[in-house]
Image (cartoon, rainbow, N blue to C red; front, side, top):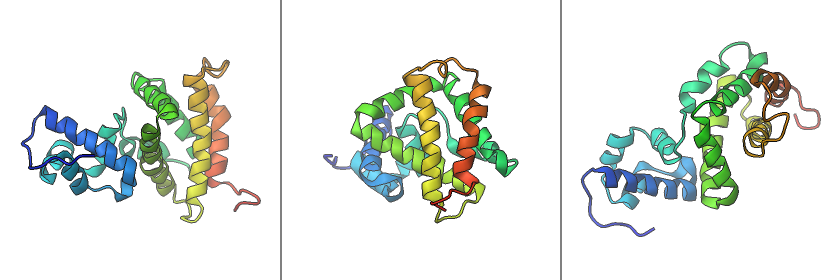
Length: 200
């Protein structure tokens, strides 16, 4: 990316430039290694302006993803309650989002990720850092087991999303959400907390 010289005052074009720079930096470096200073430098603005528009790196990341929801606001409530029912609550949360008006943005993002490497990188960073990492932290899963358990959980939830909302395979596409919660939730629960013979 060509770096712009000088620092520009804030306006709508500047905000868009920040978002474009953020997408580039997050895709290239990942969420953890990206910094507000680096994004501001690529956008040609002062880091304070990035904070003014977006507040935190997490909020900037969500904005750059056009995310319809903030996992930090939804996951704690969804994961509070009996640990042995966490899988059910997670699947219910995901279906609730995807079945809502906000779901259209999520579908568009997933479709784009299937054909665009940059979008795929951003979506992967979003899922890993904003969803999976938060989920295993809330559940207190052992740090050594967390990466594989969370990735296995993602196979179930992402697979359900693709089959229901993108491929629209029946009868899953038109099934009642609670039926799917009952069917898929136990598999998610198993990956999260149960013994996995031969693995853990």
